[in-house]
Length: 397
Image (tube, rainbow, N blue to C red; front, side, top):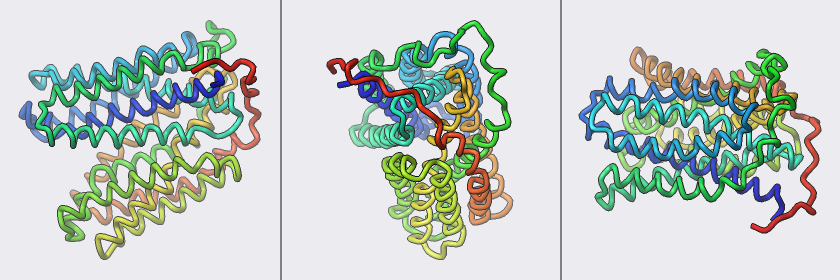
């Protein structure tokens, strides 16, 4: 196995674990709320704390990675997330839960930023698009985390046992994968003591960051409200209603599994443009759906189209960073959390004053901006990658 292949496997493992931890924790939120007797208002504050602190974690990653290397930070932050999600299950009260969740958020921000820095570095070494495959590993992890909660409920496991099992699996995978990450000199700035932020302007970051925000607004709308929309507005059965989210996640995974080949063939600009159009069409179909199956098809199209935006945004960010420091990646990662917070507030607010149909119409309109901003992703078209690692440097797996 070549050094490049080993690194690709190691980085993909951290993506999978991040999805596993995030999905496993979110699937247990109702159990956590019931166990601590949290009101909906307190639970909302707990959930909002995660992206707010994660934004700080992403900023911190942008400071540490140019000096220590993204792999060094990731080796510490990955296990931190696993331990922290287990800590949420042990919190005896809301007062203790808040600082524990803050640690979860900090770790998630650090990992989100540094694993994408590693992904960009591996992609640069390979000289071809790979980011979508890494994000596909995250999607697989998220699905496995949700299934872990189903297993735990079916077996009657307590919350500490359920999240402890997820954390244990995550720790083992992280520890096995850690030696396979790229070494610090793969993405350190040439002069670790020199300022690297001044060389990366904000304008192109905004041009690719706004589509990331829009994607996460749509993602938040689908993840939080699709089941309620299909069941309450379209009058489906409780058995059919969750199929909207299932279709969205399944098609998101399928899109990411095949998108790298498309990017390598036609480039990221057209891939984002087509993805934005398909995503917008899907959301329009959801908003106008006369029956549950139409909405489910719309959610499937939404996942299929918008899934490519985030991976290609990180690829574009890597190309904007002349020092390969990871600062641009950390900045783009901030738009993830902006979209999460805006999505929760925007969709819930519109549904409260109007209806869920109008709530889904808003991200449908916003998705048109993804099409308009697709040329910003052109920075990766024709960008010369670092030559692949010679096969003579191969080592055993």
